[in-house]
Length: 354
Image (tube, rainbow, N blue to C red):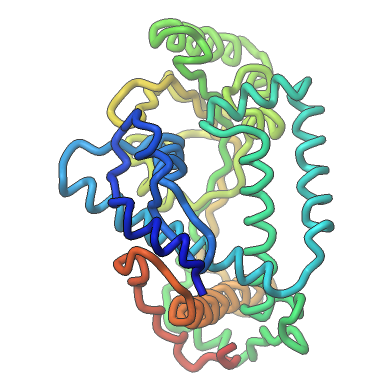
């Protein structure tokens, strides 16, 4: 049950939009309650600023609120469910503490890390809480989707997909689409705050591009100059990413990722947040992987199909379990309790529901 104090406060404080309001009492007003966990207007505002979201009209305000409701409620319910499994909190705190120590070492000092996080609109304590929420959510998801017995999870890992199912999946689509084309890239982002002005950020990006073309290691340049500490640690290198997903996220970069040769660099590309110039970026194509006409007999083909089927089933199981959490939770305001329906169960699935 929600304490009466929270109910009274919720009734007394009107829901405010995430516009940049300076009045302290508005920022401290309630935005959302999930069970007994509270999100204030100020927390919502800081989250939207961190994501680079802006609101210019009523339609945009309603859309941002709807998206924020779903995102906040989903994250809070999964984190709460993870905590309810009974996994020792001190072990999670130790893991997060080790992460913070590593970040401080790689940043140079706690002050340097604090400054880097400040650029992302958060401090070290907020980062700690976010990471703890992540680990608790992950514990719950793995116990539900069958990828781990987990704490309070399944008695066994039940993600077996029979060979007949794999052959069915192989036959129902063109073979050359089984493995989507992927790329790895390296990036350097120079922000306006980092350089001092938009022109200085561009000049710095141009200089770094010239140095890379002259033979300097792009990864080392990224490790020294990228605005984000986490990207500096991996020398600007991304994971393998599907070209189609990149084209959806950054359509202006699609021609480069589709046609560039390995090692090729972009020109400095403006980075805009909320319509305002935030900095400039450089991209270097690190690797390309394009598979054509693989045979079903190849072990890699079957492994890929198996993992894809397990992913689809895991997502469905989590959606169903999360739906039950929605039904059982106290969520205020009432419109925040609305959720998107779970997707359809994968056809002829090899494993059962949670």
